[in-house]
Length: 467
Image (cartoon, rainbow, N blue to C red; front, side, top):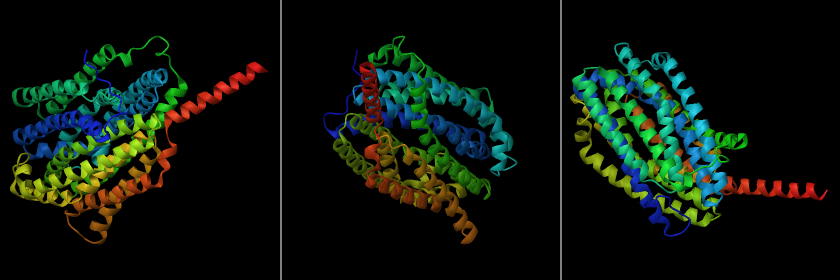
């Protein structure tokens, strides 16, 4: 069997980070391909109103999805640090107990999100003409949140062990299935936006189930005995304490996106359509940065778990250099081809012009955007998950206050939506850099704390025996 688990505590830092990132990037792009396919099919076959209705749900579904993603990321951080420290028994316990936490949390979020769909969309000033389509799409999409939680959990665990390739295979199958089902439900069965949502949920379930079964059957490090499958209250608490700040960070970022979506909705359907298309492109742009984020989290987790702090920092520098190069390349592409790219998603000339403007403006801040992801991944991997809340608060403050000041005080028009995004990325990137430079992360290693705790318990036990 091909060895999938990779120890990142030895060898070239840059090579590990880039090689590990490539399958992640391929997977992220693949996922965006079926998101883009969903958008293109809805926009071209059902019209701009349907696309705007789907777009109106994007920031809200992102909120519910990322709550689950935060807990999965926490499980990955713990797994990577225990793996790097060679604490395999602790690692297996963390994997099992994080699975229980993720399953319960995913089910609860699925239920809550379905109940809150219509009130939240109305609160966001969604166009009354679009509300019925938006509600029906979002309820179906949110029902699949538990599958999103399961896939992100197994993906985080496998990444923590250095395997970024296996999830790519199952994601590829899922993407192909999603596109086929999109075409079937929307173009053949004429089920409207509901069909597009059903196709996505089915694909998510297949991806999560198949990847989990394969991982536990074929990867030796995930083979567990009865002792490994015991519920450990302390380990569950550790998983929650590690993942919750990241989940809250994601929630705060999503809340800021919801607030900005609300502002966008107030400018009417044309701006909503342009914003939806530009956000789809922005999601594609961020995939290399997301990949570097996950790569740095695993690299930092394994190396800091092993006590190799200097090596972890060298990896961070390699990640920042890579993200900066990518940012400049993508900025150049959007200044030259912005309108052509937007035209893939929408038909109206006014919306295309506005979408192209959005891409040109936001691309000017891709360098700080890349640094946000790279530094965030490094600090998460180091166990400094408390910073995640600070990061989320910075984004909320910038997006909400930026929009209020630019539109409410300065009297700017819809262009303030994208100017706000630029300010948000710049300020948040600076906050991340200052956190790294503070050195607080050096004392946050989960593996170190567990080792110290075990040592203290052993000494106390020995003392009790002597007495």
